[in-house]
Image (cartoon, rainbow, N blue to C red; front, side, top):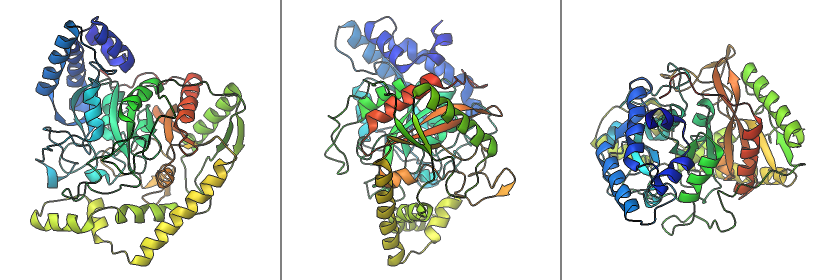
Length: 476
């Protein structure tokens, strides 16, 4: 039965079957909602569902196929959209009481493109408030649980998107990544997450619309990208959502690559492995698993492997300052004054900070210095590899762990590896590389400037070698 087969079907297979008429889009959607209804009360992946709209879309697609009309590359594929990404006519809350009833009158560019590709939107997935936190809890909805252990978090802020894909509700989902929010939940949920190079996937109006305080911002560090169960499905989604758009002044051409034509990784590829980030603590079991995975890849893929350490630049302080600089703090304060509702601790803390101009210029200067140092590194290597984060999944009602292996840590120390590459804009992906105490861990692959095609080559090659994790305990 399709309902039994659906949770493990790839987006590629679904699109092929629907486009050929072998499966109807409605039948696929029936299976998707059956999967969702089986697990949603446990994982709480969704903030808002779009059942009625989804069935209208599926029926219209089926009618077009009967008439012999051409269909898009994601024909009939159910997708989930992170609740920070605008969807016309479908509630978008950003995980905040400030926007609890907000219904956009425009789609984000990526949503326009998914619809044009004939994907079918199931609904909006849960996030931390405004994405200020790599977790899946807020003051509006139940905390999202990780299908590998529902008492744990899937990470975030693309929490619901990762949980939905891991549990088999949909094969692909949209996440956004301002500091790791695609790669982190992918790693904690046993999935593939890709942050393409800055500008490859256009963002609009979400990061630009100044009428949405709290939402507008992060323009120079934010990326939208796929969360998927395998690299080929992530690449398929990128083939649909990537490409320039005049509404996003950061967007760039993609004519230099074909997303779905993933080339083999050549032997002798030069790889630099950073097993830790400076002196920050990493869970020993996770480090051991990542070390083992990298050693396996070096041998199986013929890598030229060097073990090293990142430049001694405090990029955490730089990243934190860039987030503050690119957030409409004045508008957010005014909105809260006009609508005094409860907001998260992270939002409260951000609004309480006061940054003099010197802090801003110091952050911009440090960002340039770090980017220059990384450019020097990448002149000698094809990739940097790191653990995606320093811990396995933590309690779902927490914003993050306070200790690692019994050692007290600062709030940012459990995820130091991802945000630096939002500052540089380099392409990066996370692929599953093992289980530690039954919980997934991920390996981050960072490519050269605009080296998206090579990152996908490495991700696909590594995926073929690394052990398969299987399905999580909670699945459709």
